[in-house]
Amino acid sequence: MLCTLVNMEIEIVEEKENPFLKRKELKLVLKHPNLPTPSKQELKKELASKFSLSEEQIQIDYIFSKKGLCESFSKVKIFEKGEKSEAQAGKN
Picture 1 (cartoon, helix red, strand yellow):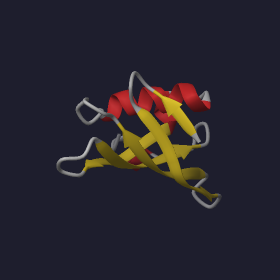
Picture 2: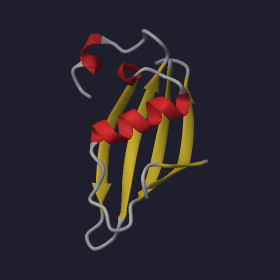
Picture 3: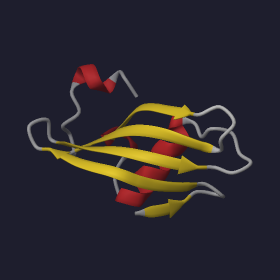
């Protein structure tokens, strides 16, 4: 599954349902040629529009870029509406 954000390509390489915690866990590859690593806020905004969710339902664990490559790896959690706990709410 691919989507584009101003010269950035987002590829979902792994998608896992976690019914116990009422969330979906995604591992992404972000390809951003000639651009810096995208911020968590930029990625959160793009995923919210892609999945028709509010930004509060999305938690980005990390965005990691390898040195010398225009490619980043990210782990994201998407919660069901209203299921994000108070401890997770402070994390972004």
